[in-house]
Length: 278
Length: 278
DNA sequence: GAAAGCAATATTGTCTGACAATAGACGGCA
DNA sequence: TGCCGTCTATTGTCAGACAATATTGCTTTC
Image (cartoon, rainbow over all chains, first blue to last red; front, side, top):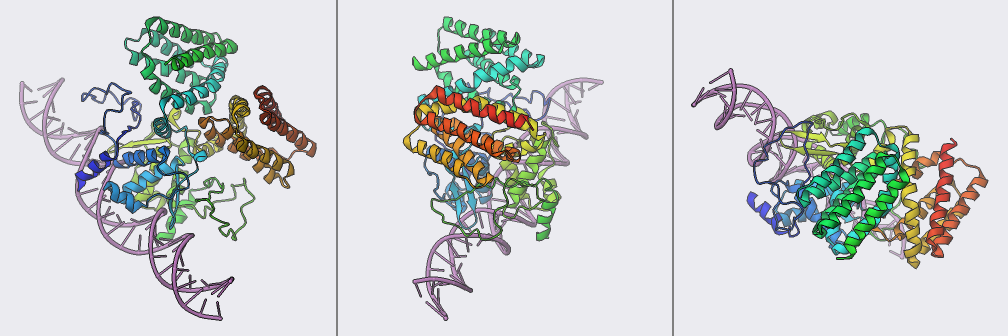
């Protein structure tokens, strides 16, 4: 019965989510760790069937239930099946179900009370800016709409964040930004390049000096994940994009907020075009 | 031994947090509910000792541990005491501890692995825009700094969100906005007024037509919670503020994005002054 | 003496089964 | 009809056990 638990879960996990394969080194220098086994997936392409090797049961369960909720299987206000039911459905213990539900409660997707059960919270209370919820949300409507929403959001925050970065960045933060920019230019593969690109934008958010801007990095990561399929661009386009990034880097370095803001706007407009032209 | 559990928890709960006393009606029309007991606290003032009557053990535990982490008791990278230890410390079962930890994991404050334990994630991964995390975060530094950060954030998003609202709002959303604005003017108490004020701004976010802006409402709520102590303003100031709100309402109604944006900027500038003049 | 492999160990992960607390639903009583 | 108590379904909480896992240190071998 133990092995069947995993099986039952897998069966329900068509779109398959993993907990954001970012490297999560627990402590400071926890060394190479021996990643000898299976070289890290080509990345990004996570739709290759259902296999979450290292995921715990409650995490998988939370993903499964969370996805269903965000997808709309259980509209806000609906009372979910009770814990015993989930437990039976997935052939897992009630403890596992409870831990999964607690995770969803922490994301404000659910709330519950004794004798009532667990119900889906109204959408405006969902923490859409949570990494997992965002990932689930990103699958439900078609890519286009999601990307448009994220991109619009970037238009709102990134220019201002960059302007702040130009005013307040420390030398250390500047170094991070510059390095990421440089590595973008020197990247061998598109994937490597995208990684550096992401790091570039996240570094800017951190340099903005406003703690509340940092968590919005998940949006950028998400956007780049979904943008990845669009990035079969020509070399000259890549060069153009690189120049736009360098302009941003330069204006932050020279502490010119307005110029930096304008440079970001240009870059975003370019990205908009890439999306639109598809 | 059962009663001592609660006691042990209470003992550790000096700053005392409750799960955001917002009304949480589970299902559609779940009626008045009989709130006969102890009329809802004067609101906002939550520092009156340690009593979380309706909170479950794991929720309280999560608050307690979460607060400690955000406060800096366990810096990022630190390995926390293990589950057995927490269980002993608070005289609760290991299940309760685990459920609490799962909630914190869901907020990206923690991560864990067998044999290692649970460690505090780096700050840039924390989901600061989560309602609870934000509440914990709001206590650690002094009010001033926190308010300044939130207010700066509002300057970034609210003008743009309002401009979008002016372009895309539905009639229904407009009605919400107008009603909140009206109720602000008619409010009898300051508390009632603040509630309507909050509703006004949240309604605008919802009307912006960008789902990702909605979760930022927690920032506004938080700001108003902390701003409440500042609001012993004179009547003529209140009138002025009301006029500013009405200007926003009008420009959204007439679908003038630029004017709406400008109106919001004015209101925010006014709020800035209120904060600064303290 | 150094390197590689193996065993011991500590911690989270998972399961099971039980009881408590809660509040809605239902029926009985005035 | 309307109030009141009981019944019951569901989450909340507890306890104890075993599994999985990866670090640590020991042992073996070259």
